[in-house]
Length: 314
Image (cartoon, rainbow, N blue to C red; front, side):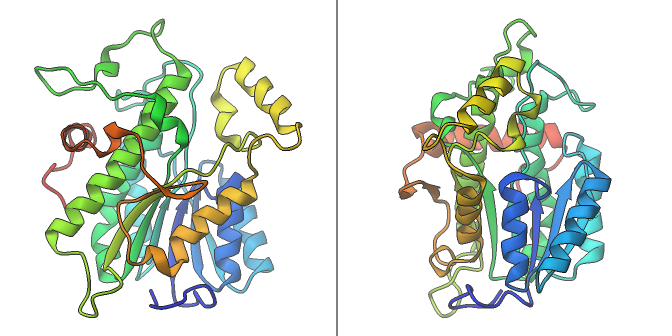
C-alpha cells in the first residue's frame, strides 16, 4: 500500500471484497478497479460472479477476479482464505461487505444462527486466516460494513458458559430485525476490539510516526433500500423496501454507500486512524456496548469458540 494520497494510483494494490457482486460492493469494486487495483470479489452465485468480474475488468484499468464462497459455512470461509493466499501474493485491503437478513431462524451446517454466521463470524474467521498476509503487505487496512441499526441491539451472554443468549432462542422467539441488528453490533464491537488488540501488539505507528501498519475501521453505508440485503427478509419487509426505494429523498443510494466504503479503503486520513465508526456525518461514537471492553472480550472469545480458533489471536 502506497503512502500519501492513494486517490490516484492503486495499481500495485490488491483488495479482497466480500459481497462484491451486487449493491454497494459491486459499485465499490468498479471504483477501486478504475484506479488500477486488483480486486477480488466474493459471492455465492458463480455464473453471476464471473460475469460481473469480466464486465468490471473490461470497463476499468484494473483486474477483477471472482471467488465463489458461501460465507455461512466455516469450511467455505477457510477454503476462501486458502484460495486467496494461493492466488495473490499480497493483500492491501480486506473489506467485509457481505451481509444478509434471514426471515426465519435458520441454523448453518455448523449449528450457528444464519444471520450472525454470515454477518459476523465469517468476517471474524476470514480476518484471522488472512491476517499474516495483511501484515506482510503493510501498511494495510481492514474495512467492515456495519450499520446504524446496531444501536438498537444488545449482546447478552449466558452467565455460566459465556454463550450468547440468542443461541438458545426458539423459532417463535426469533425476530429478523433484531437478529440483523445484533450482527451489526457485533461488527462494530469486533472492529473496535481488533483495532485495540493490534495497537497493543505493536501494529501501530511505523517509524515515521504517521501511517499505521494495519488499521481496522467500520462504517454505516446509509439506509439503502434498493440493495439485495433484504433478499431473505420476510415478504412484508421486502415489499416495504420496494415502496421506500421508489420514494424520492428517502434513504441513501448504493453509490453513496460505495463512496464511503472506498473512502475508508483508500483515503489518507484512514491510514492513520483505527478502531473508528464512520457514519453519515463522519467519525461518530458507536453504541456504548460496541466499545464496552467486557462485551468486546466476551464476543471475541465466544466467536473464537464458534469458529474453532485460539481466542488469543492476533
